Image: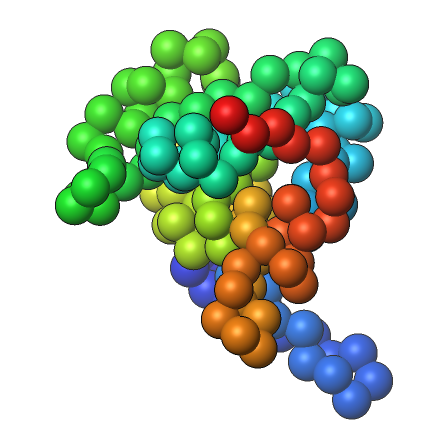
Length: 157
C-alpha cells in the first residue's frame, strides 16, 4: 500500500482510520510506555526554543534517557527549519530508530513524522496531544490533555 493512503476497517459500528504516511499516533502515555520499554526509542521535541525554555520540557531522566531537541519550525516567523534533518542526524538516529515526535498539540510533530517517513525513516511516530494538548472550553492548553496535563515528568526553567 502506498504512503499517504488511509486504511479503514470496521469494528462493530466504528470505523478506525489510520493515516499510513507515518508510523502512527501515540498518546502521551503510550509514548512514555514505548520509551520505557524500547531501549532504542527516542523522544524528539520539535517545538521552538522559546517553548522549551518557557513552557517546559519532557524529563526522561527516570528512564535513563535524554530528549532530543530539534525545532521543526523556526521562531519567530515559524518558517520550516531547513536544517531539521541534518540536526537530527547529529544525534546518531538511524532510519529504523523509533522516533517519537512531540510538539505543542500534535500538528507540527505529525508534519515532521510524515516528512521523516518520506525520507526513509520507518518508525516516525506522532504524539497526538503533544506537550500541551488541545484547548479547553476557555481556550487554554495544558489542562485537558498532553504530556503536562497527564502529569508525565517535565521540567521548566
